Structure formats: C-alpha cells, structure tokens
Image 1: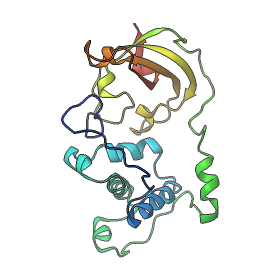
Image 2 (image 1 turned 135 degrees about the vertical axis):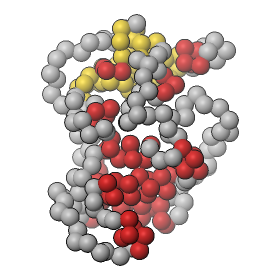
Image 3 (image 1 turned 180 degrees about the horizontal axis):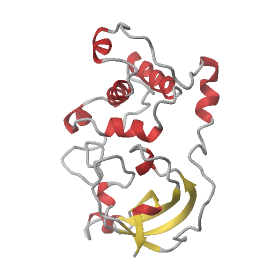
Length: 220
C-alpha cells in the first residue's frame, strides 16, 4: 500500500540524523513493547507480514510522528482487536472483562533466545518450478498500487534493474500479509541505479538493491 511507511525517494522530511552510540531503547516502555510483540507473535494468531501491514496501515500523520516503538504498539493493538483477543473497552481500562481466547502457543522466557534465532529460513519453501530469471538478467518491476501489503516499494515501481542474486523459493508477503496464504514464489536480489530510480542528475555510482519476488518482475 502507499502509506506513511513508503518514504523512499520522497523529499521534505529532513536529513536522517545518526545518533552516536545509540541505545537499543530510549525508554523503558519501548523494551516492554518489543517484549509484548514478540510474546504475542508466539500465539499464532498472525504472521510477520500481517504484523507489518498492521503498522503500515496506520494513518500517515500518525506513522510519521510516532516514535518507532509507538508504531509497534499501535500495530499490535490493531491485531489484538481484529482477532478478538481483547475489546476496545479492555484496551481503554486495562482490565480483563471477557475470558481469553485459546491460542496456538506461548513463549516462555527461557525459550526467547532460541525462538528468535530459529526464524532464519522460516519462510523457505520447497522449489515447485524453475526460476524465471537468472543472475545478470535485466528485469522491470510492475507498476501497481495495491491497497494491502506489498514488498515492492513505491519508488521502485516501473523501473529497470538487474538480477544480482537468486535467493530461493519463499513465502510471498504480498499474499501472506493479505490473508491469501503463503503462495511461495522465487525471490531475487535486484540492483537499480540511482539514476534509473530518481533521474539523470543523481550520482552515477550510487545503486540500490532490493529483494523482490517473481510476481513483482517482468522481463525488461
């Protein structure tokens, strides 16, 4: 979707200021939000792509003004409400009024480290067909503006790039995030020049690489 999260190439937001020795969290509540989001993910009520959509679909004014972990908090509240895991009244009062629903799993404190580090490869799927593109091939991204979740950034749509890696056969977020199942597809690393994305006045030595799925691409 074209929301507040899709900022690539946009102007007028000021520079990105790097904070020296930046801490992981700037306040205690931020670490609590992250812990809550990780723990709730183990309930099995949504997947990572659906959680991204919950954050991306916040009103742009909120997305652009909220601190990072405030965005996480708003997103997980949307997910909890949509899955009937709590009510709006419970969210407001902080008190349980209905029995909790049954969930598929829980995350124990001693299992957090192994649980987080076992996610590598979780989206891998057996190859069902040959890859349509190969390393070195020129491809063009499709130009579409979906209402739901997509991993194809707005600034890269309708542009020509070059495949630099074939990354495997993976769950397709544009399907998984929109409640349409995993629909696995080939995943590629695609390189674009800055001039291709943003015009001839950009540095000819600058490039951007994106991980894009096969449905995002056509032969150039």
